[in-house]
Every structure is written in C-alpha cells, then in structure tokens.
Length: 146
Length: 468
Image (cartoon, rainbow over all chains, first blue to last red; front, side, top):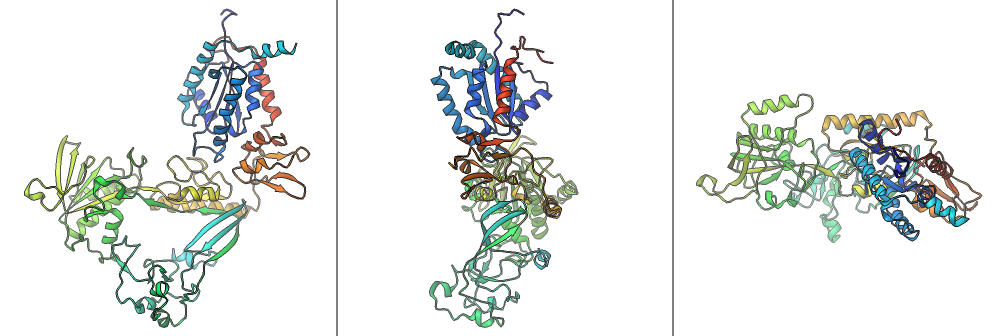
C-alpha cells in the first residue's frame, strides 16, 4: 500500500427511486463495487443543478456520475428525467470549456431493477477515471487564486 | 353494473369525456364533456318502442357490441345490459340528422317524449375528492399481423367475435357458424396473438389462455367440432383454473405446443382443399404438422388504450414501459398512483381477469373512501417552498413542475408552492434562476455540505474493504 497509488474520488448523484435503489440493491446483493464512489441521494435527477457537478470537481472529485430513471416513462415524478436529459448535454459543454476531460463525467439511466448495471458502471467508471489520472482541480483553482 | 346505476350516491355520466382536471387531493375540479345522445335520459325508461318504430324497418348498420357480426338501427341500445337502460341515436346514420327530412316515427312512438333531436353537447364541472381511473384496455389489432390472415380470409375470427357467436344473446343466438352460415367441423385456436412476442407486445396478457379454453369448450359443446389449441405455454394460475384445463383436456380438445406459421388456404392434399391450413411445429414431438381447419380463432392479447398517453397527462399519472398506467409500487401499492387521490382499477393498470379486476376495483373504492372519510391527508415533509423575498417573478418554475403545484400570485408578484400537490422532486429548486426555491431536506446548503464533507476525507486507499 504505497502512498503514490492514485485512488480516484468519484461523486455519484443518484435519484432516490431508480439508480439509488439499484445501488442499494447492489450492496444488499454483495456485488463488488469500488469504495471510490460516494453516493449523494437526491429525490429526482431533475433536482441536480449543474453547480453541484462543478462544486464536486472543485472540491477534489476526479469524476462525477449522474444517474436516474429511464426515459420516457420510468420517472417517479413523470418527467424529471427529461429535464436532466436536456440539462446534462449543456453541462458536458460547460465542462469541456473548463478543460475537464469528458471521460470524467457520466450521465445516464439505471432503473431500480438494474443493480448489476450499477455495480458494473461504478467499477468501469472508476477504472476509466483512474486511467485519466488525478484532476487536481482544487489545487489548480487554489494556485490561480494566489 | 345495474346496481351502480341505481345507487343513490352514484351518479353515472356515460357517453362523456373528461377534458380537464385541476386541483389536488381532496379538492379536484374535473371538467366533463357530455356528448349528446339525442334522448332525454331522465325521461327514457328503456321500453325500446322507438327502435321498433324507426323508419328503417330492418336493422342495417354494423353493431359495435357484436363486433360488427350483428346489425342495429340508428336508434339503439348499445347492448342488452347497457347501464343506464337508455337508448341513443347515432347522428351519422339517422336520416333526420343526415337530411332533416325524416318522418320521425321514433319520436311519435315515444309516449314519454324523450327523443330530442336538438340536444347539444354539455360541459359539466364537478368537484371531487378522489379519482379512480378505470379506463380499461383494448384488444390487440389482429389485422396488424398479416400472416394470420385476419381480414383476408373470412373465416379467421378474433376471440371476441367468436365469444359473441357463442352468446345466447349474440347475433346468431348462440349458433357458432362460419360466414356462409355452415357449422365448422374443425377449429384452430391460435394463442398469444399480440402477446409474449418481441415484435408486438412482450407481456403475457394473462386472460387469453383461460378464455381460449372457454371458447374451446363452448365451440366443442355447440358444434362438436375438432378443436386444436396452438399455444406457447398454458398459463392457468388462479382458483379452479387448472381444473378447468383438465376438464377441457378430458373433453378431447387437442393441444399443440408451437407457434403457427402463416395461415393460408393453399391445400396440398384433397383433405385440405377449401380449408385454412395451419402449419405448425409440434415442439412436444418435434415434427412439423399441417392441420386443415374450417375456422381460425385468434386469441388476441390486451394492450393499453390508444389514448392512454393523453389520459395519463390529464390526470398527472405516469405509465410503465408497456404503456399501462403505473402504480405507486408494484407489490405494496398496486392501487395508488404517485398522484395523491388518484387510484387505478382494472386493466388500465395491467392485464387481469374478472376476479382480480373486481378485487382491484374494490380496493380502489375502499382506498378512495378511506381517504375521504379521514378528512385530512398526511403529506411528505420533503416539499419545496418559495423564499418570497428572493422570488423575481420570472415564472420559470411554473413550466417545469410536473404536478402544477406552483401557482403565481399576481397580487403579491411571487410564485407559491402548494404543499398538498408538491411531491418534492426538486426540479423547480434546480431550475429557479434566483435560487428562491428551497427544497426541504435537499436544500442547496445540505447537498453542498455533503459534497464538501465527502471530499474532505482522505481518498480511500484500497478498493476492497476500505469502508466496512
């Protein structure tokens, strides 16, 4: 266990009804998931402000996941996922403008019944971010302020 | 049905459409468009003398209830047990409506003066506390599958058509006959038409195995024909259902496990001439068989009504992937929707048979009554509220709310969230450009503190077992 090993930090914003349920089920079923992913539960992906994603990166996250209910009909709140569907491409553009690799941001849909899909995403995304290396946006931002 | 019509506390509005729903649990305002039936409901007693007296001496228009197998007149009772027992006039077919020059013998025959050619469409507004959506299903359109020959070969029927033929009050008085009036000597019943099929509907429609068994029994009983069932799996769950399957088996009805290839009238051997030929792989014995029959019955599946999408948006409810209305929880809340005060009953929620529909409807009625009798509702604390000092009156939140829970107070020039309607999804909170809307339990401060807190800790060192 050397200190030089890079362990990526991933923040996942999951909706209460679909992907959070899937992540919960994945844990109950003891599916293998990396400890690198920290989950923040929101009631609906429609609640996720782009600011949260930027905030996560600026606080030191190396990757961010947004996941909710499958469009069109799965959303517990009728159409909150559609708002996410419109918002997230804009977030992708914004991150590109900040110079954040698009591989560090994932948004998509995992239903409550798709626990293996969540476990697989948390593993593959962590590995993807590991490959991209540390983002260190926090230190970069701090050095600019000085 | 008749009992519901007679009940003093039940008001039936038939031949009507809901055009708008507003309000919230305990306080819904429903706008209803009542179509004219050209007969005064309060005067008509259902004596049917107008039908007798109609200028058309012979019934000559296809009867919708009998799937077009029978005929009706322009003035008619939709079906014998129709509730209320009130006739109606079809303005598309009635001479008075088409030309304005009819002798109006129906109106003359009516001693209660119930016929009113001037009746207009009415719009009603009712205040209700709870709503039960029981809009039912439609059967799969067999004509959309050309390979079964429905609409091409006259003796290919849907199950509902044959059900009408077997009915004593049906167009043939219970005689199962082919289009030429003769009795079939052999009948093939094709199961799972528009069910359990990746090309059409993927779900099992649940009732078709049992109604196919019923039709097999009835057709055999009425005609003595050889009856062949072509099935994928026999699904007979339910009290006494498997026993009925055993009974039909013992009656000598044939069961062949396999999907039927396109239905044709191409005979190869003399016995097949003039018959419909069903080619099928009998997967129980592993051979391909050719079975000539006189009549083919398609066991069509159940699917959501064509306008289910409009109904869902009207009542603010969602639909599952198959298009049926979505329940609040598939196991624990099968009657409620995610909109408080709106309940589901019957096949509008998914295919089910009669006993299950009766149970589902009873549960919906009980839940509605329990809700209303309590007089108050418990709502989730996870709702949004507007900080009126920050609200800039841009009204962006009004457009994103899926529950129309946000209204704009013109006098105060601020948006307000109705606690009873808000479900706490937080979409408006994320959308508000002035950050004036706060989502209780999921406020910006709380979520940001979570992000900061999580990332303040040092990174997990190992993948396995970093946090037990």
